[in-house]
Image (cartoon, rainbow, N blue to C red; front, side, top):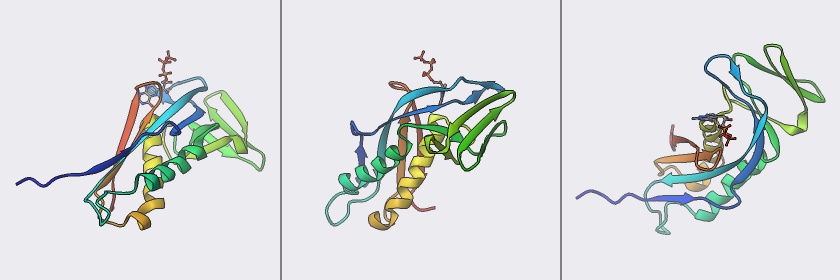
Length: 165
Ligand SMILES: Nc1nc2c(c(=O)[nH]1)N=C([C@H](O)[C@H](O)COP(=O)(O)OP(=O)(O)OP(=O)(O)O)CN2
């Protein structure tokens, strides 16, 4: 007989962060700076624990919320882009692409360990950070964690990471 599989999903009204970004696509086309009200969904898969749940909804909710709050009202910049160069001094962060330049106060920026600030890459960063923050609490019996990031009313970038690397 096939075994039952369980997962927990949290999608909350508070899982929204408003952020500015720009990406490149098709080689060297670079978008103008613009913003999104991003939405987030989190799913964890694994066996039932002694409480007969996969993980506590509330603990997962709070871990995701910590990450969305950290991104809310910031400019998201990529750390690993080959053509968008991001540098910071003690006051300001500058992003350069070819002959274009954007300058922001440091506190307005979040520099992410990504190549391009696509929904998929943002989802991966959130997933890794949620996993790192909850691993101790949730234990190592889980199978995977998935984070989905919605850029614009139904345009989801999704990343599933193994719970144990
Ligand atoms: N798979 C992905 N595709 C695209 C991504 C992405 O992250 N993953 N991102 C973009 C751009 O960021 C683009 O700016 C998306 O913004 P959006 O506002 O949805 O695009 P439009 O300008 O067409 O939408 P309007 O509703 O007309 O403002 C593209 N693709």
